[in-house]
Each structure stands twice: as C-alpha cells, then as structure tokens.
Image 1 (cartoon, rainbow, N blue to C red):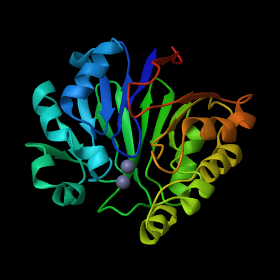
Image 2 (cartoon, rainbow, N blue to C red):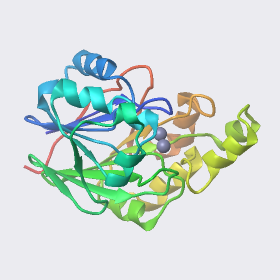
Image 3 (tube, protein in one colour):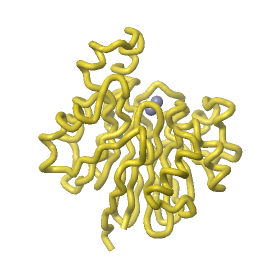
Length: 256
Ligand SMILES: [Zn+2]
Ligand SMILES: [Zn+2]
C-alpha cells in the first residue's frame, strides 16, 4: 500500500507526502514546519514515519520550512550541493545530505530518482519515487517539457503535476510584464494547457492518479483546471490540491 497526500500545493508553498505502512518521504517543505505537522495530524499521517525530506530547489515555496522541519522530525534533508549554496541562510538545513541529479537515493524501501528540470533555479530537480513496483512522480516548477520529464512520466502510476497558470488569466492579469514573461518562459512554470498536452500525449497506461498541483493564486483557479482536464477524467482520477489545507489522502495498492 502506498499513501499519497499533497500537504500543501500552490505557488506560495509546497509539501508532498509519499509513504507506505512503515516509512515515508516528503518532497519539499515550503510552508512552516508547524503547519506541515498540523496538516499531517489532521490527515492522520504519522510524522514518525517520515525518514527523509527532499528539496527540489531553493525557492521559498519549496524550501522555507526545511531547516526547522528537519530539526523537529530529526530527519536528513537531501539536496543538491548547488541548491544548498543557493538557499537563503535561514532556510539552510544543518546537516544536508547531498545527492547528484540523475543518481538514485534509497530511503528504506523507497528508491528516489531525481532528475534535472527546466526552471530558473540553481540546480532544480523533479523526482520519481519507486516502491514495490509503483512509481510516483512529483513534477512541479517546470518551464518546458524535456525528454527526462517524458521518460519519467511514462513510468508513473501516480503523479503530482504542476498546472500553474491559465494562459488567458496570465496574459490578461495584473502581473507586471517581466513577471508574466518569466512565468511563461522555458524556465518558468507549466500552464494548464502544457500539463494537459503532456498527460494526453505521454502518460503510460498504468497512470491512473493525477494530482493537479502548484496552482497560481493569481493566474489560475481549481474550477478552471477541473474544466480543462474534464476530457481526461475517463482515463485518470484527477485530484485537486490546495494551498490552504492538506489535500485528500489517496491510497494505491502495490504489486505485492
Ligand atoms: Zn514553486
Ligand atoms: Zn520555483
């Protein structure tokens, strides 16, 4: 059995839980440690099971809670060396464990496969997490789709996938022009349309569970995403995530 939950998801804070009966890993800690603990408690996710925190990149919405959370749960923080250097001094975890993008890390019975992504950070990574024949993707903050994203997506049974912005809302919205350009650039974020195309064209037959993730507060909303993805509801169970609360806890059966 594998348990999945978006503890926080959105352009102002991200934290994703992937666990089995005995152990769990977290990807990103972009809200406070106190809020992560409270939301885990609400969803009856046991913090004692968490064995490691992986940080995808240094932006505050992924890393701001890392230092305190690691101390509180007494867990190692896995991070690339360049991301560690780029992290703000008050977010830096005390005793980082460095990984290289493209080399896998074993955490108990999980295998975490990091890979580089296109985003405006020092050494940004996405993750595919493997347990008992099940592969879970955590793909957020992706400016453009590369072969690595496609190859890893093809293996996934479940996926946290960025659907950051609606094209029309972004371009007609109030953001300053340089920020609009940055978000839509090849090193910014995935739009609803890009995420839709990625899923529609490249998902494997075994992918059934999709959490639409990392929605912008200004340039997107859950209704818009739900409508955009309604065509795919016959192929996938689509779950919304939220910045305000932990999302639904979803359990998948492994190949046991
Ligand atoms: Zn982000
Ligand atoms: Zn980012």
